[in-house]
Image (cartoon, rainbow, N blue to C red):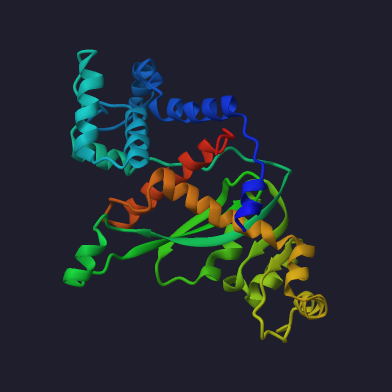
Length: 302
């Protein structure tokens, strides 16, 4: 095994790789919103009833991307804005205003991708709702708790085509077809949908076939019944004839691991927990992280 690893050759264009990673820093640290402050604020207050806004949304979009990519608190962000805005003679919003306004922002996945052909993979992962360590859990028997991020991932680019956030009680397959429909609603043409055995549901097989998508789902070893889905029955017969490994190779099941890579990448770069306590704010925080992840994937330094 050691010899085979040593003999592997892996080429990377380090110049492009380093530049792509630097572009990620440009994305997060972009201060061009300062130049658009007055027109943005004027547009937001146009026709507004009651007290006018003192700060444009761009301030809080910048703040959210800073906090959720660097895992810093609202109070720390308030201090950073004091430095930035104070240099121009302005005042900074306090931490409670930052929290409230960040919770009002929308985080789109990206522009519509009409007629873009993709293969997608389902998966879900837990997002911790606390930054407590394992010692606190073991010593005081305090459970950490988590919410679930369900995602449908582009197996070529590792970007997230559609996602949903749920409580931990939802099964992996509960939102599979919802994610597919959301991706299709953004204009993607999906050829194949990959999933592990957690997505081996009759409704998912039938739903994907109805939408003209080829299901490539890992079937349970003892599964011998089609459960009313003719195509699944054909796949069971083919797997039994070829063997599980050959069946997976034939249908490209190996692409499914890209979903796990996506979650690993997202958690490694943006953290595996949320600071918010309300579920609605948790959803906003996770949405921001997914948005940042997709923008990172525009740069190929991965």
